[in-house]
Length: 403
Ligand SMILES: Cc1cc2nc3c(=O)[nH]c(=O)nc-3n(C[C@H](O)[C@H](O)[C@H](O)COP(=O)(O)OP(=O)(O)OC[C@H]3O[C@@H](n4cnc5c(N)ncnc54)[C@H](O)[C@@H]3O)c2cc1C
Image (cartoon, rainbow, N blue to C red; front, side, top):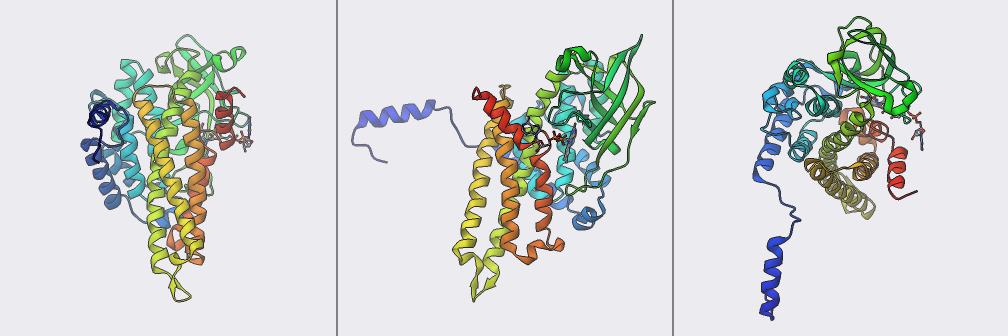
């Protein structure tokens, strides 16, 4: 652009040098995302429809993720981590590629729950001994971690937890149950939140790292569910389950702070995989709209269809900006409760909306299981429930507005 006023041109050019907002990605991030996308596309696509129908978690794919290094994104290299530093922004960008390349959205949920609600939490709050003991096996994929908060009576009211932890001479005895926990039926360790002081409400909660082989620790059978069938979720029953004092994560009474911390990372990274899945879904929908012909023309030439796809694209692009902003905030260790809630609400609701739109565009073919389009909707629905329902995200947003 030519400026008639030279002074203005110089001023603008100087200002642009100091602008902080920069939408470009470092080449290193782009390369890593490309690598993960290629890996997920070529290595993680086995028997998706059959495994979804059977509800099979693939140990083989999990191991491949461990071998590739994806399961070490939330640890430092000294404990088996993938990169020289834990970088949530790079991880989110890469996990978008994972979600794009890997049709197994259940596997994506397993990877993220393991990484951000258990591994990251131990990385941040663990003692040196805890990090040495638990992180390397989590990074390699030998151990799977579950994050157990929810109980029969504490769902959205997440900190009305009834599970108790009574102190003994050498540790704690845990009693109670957890439900709806991702990976619970097959986890090797579980981060269990229990009350060490019921009178103090949420400030009386403590986080415990519990070995699933401990006496009194029962993993109940896998529960059937609507979508995400390739990741098992279920109940844990703890009866006089002894946990040594050295397995307390953080301080006694710090359970609420620890869980809130991990939920912000979880809301961010878990959604990155979904963003990738939405990208793939959009591409498939555009392709179908271009090739499917009715009334002698491609259905994409009907405005009703093309506008639907335009809305899918708009949702995707808005979600992308919200996600990257949140990931940038977490990389810079900024509090992200409000932004996390807006992101979670918008992205998970958008994924549901766009999944319905994709089915509408595919028509009857979209409704058939063999085409993999209907699975998108079944997988998307869980996102408006877990890690806080959409109603709860709206409550968080409203409370930040002083309401
Ligand atoms: C696939 C999946 C994976 C999950 N993984 C885990 C996991 O790994 N670990 C774990 O601990 N939990 C997990 N959960 C549990 C999940 O976090 C809870 O299901 C969720 O928090 C909602 O709790 P609830 O099911 O008891 O519903 P409820 O809290 O009973 O809510 C029922 C309805 O009431 C609404 N409601 C409740 N309170 C309010 C309010 N104050 N304002 C407005 N509306 C309200 C809700 O929005 C919802 O519509 C998972 C759930 C799913 C579906």
